[in-house]
Length: 271
Image 1 (cartoon, rainbow, N blue to C red):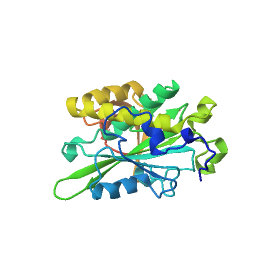
Image 2: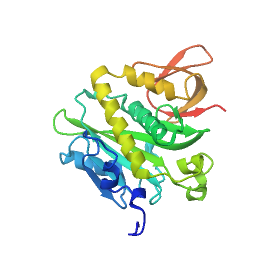
Image 3: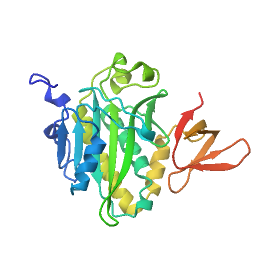
Image 4: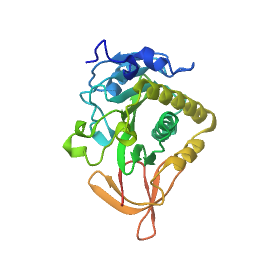
């Protein structure tokens, strides 16, 4: 639990995050929790109750933090940013495939703004430094009445975690911004920067489509041109990642010269 003597700037209290927001919808309403099962699940509940676009759920810790592909996200108390955002895009569901890529670009840009650190994006949405992951994005669609839906964009960022904070199972593959930079960061400032960049890119997506987001993603990525193994369910495929298609799917060239398209899966980069 946070105590009264703790520096508020290192909490995710709504007023602390909102100090760094300049207008806009994203973060104008923030629901704060000391501990929560999952910010994504709570955001889904609020969306079903009519929660407005731009509503944010944040927590100091999560008991069942959600990662991609059914994994959990390690969410220790007061060390990271666990944040989920309700988006109600005026688009058909088939047109929202790029939001995970958009979220990854926003994460990379926000981290660079605040720290000067240039992270790499591993397809589709993992942020890495020297091959270790410190942040990721999870997007989930919540169907509502009729053809209405909302999109929940969640993020987990390892900000001020120390090496021994991580479980042994991920200690060799995970890192934090504190471990990379050698100093603690103000989490509220980074959360505010993220919301600002997310909203900027969202407006651009609505105005210009996915292509500008794809180009930005390519500028940050560490996947294209690399030999990769893609795990999807029980199947694995090895080849060279060569491009993204217009929907954000990863195109991989196998040893037979054929191009295979993947819309989901876990990518492992060959060292």
